[in-house]
Image (cartoon, rainbow, N blue to C red; front, side, top):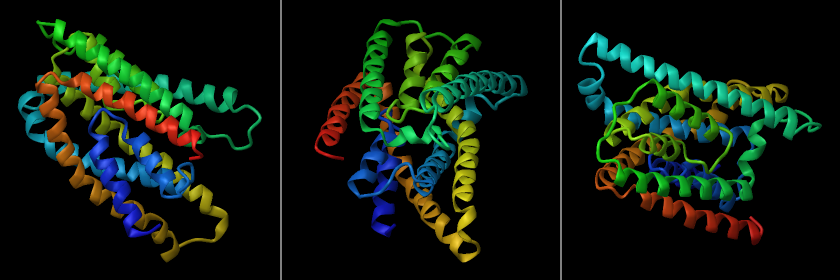
Length: 286
């Protein structure tokens, strides 16, 4: 993989990851246009490491706000940690159930079937983009009618976590778009939703990285690759992580501005348009 290819994917990831337009779908389409295989272990690891770069962008961007709203006292911290735990547990339950259904039932009879086999399915990506686009538009319209925002509680946290679990196996179903939209539909204040959604992303990213590192090492176990050769496998991902960090910071500023101005549903319109682009690319052979 060339430096130019890595840079393109990192910029696409960083710009799209922190906007509710599904960075995974954009990166997978970019990979296909660049002639790369999105389902290969090296590519899924690169995608996750690009997410890691944007995770550090989230930490950098939100740290001051988190300290102000959630870390100013011990009770506030433990309340926040409890809500994150509830949401993450819901994500784990839903995600594991979906993974079992996909790998054991949908892919029954396929040798060594893994959920990552779905990642390069362009029609599925287009359908997921269209679904989340409609959900974002609905949430934006619902937000306009909710004049009295509610505090984030256990019920809303559980629903947000469950919807995040649905996002995991389906590239195109934007994680940030779905989680923030779920909270908006439930009437939660939009600024707290943004902070909470990306806090969940920080918690979720490390175990996902661990899974993809394991997949890569497992795939290379029988090839005799070690030492410098193993570093060569990880180097593209590390470089992409750094580049996605900087583009992610810029995207976060854009997201916050549009959410504050009540322009949330425009992201949904973009997802619908991009779904059309994805299915058009598929029909012409990508």
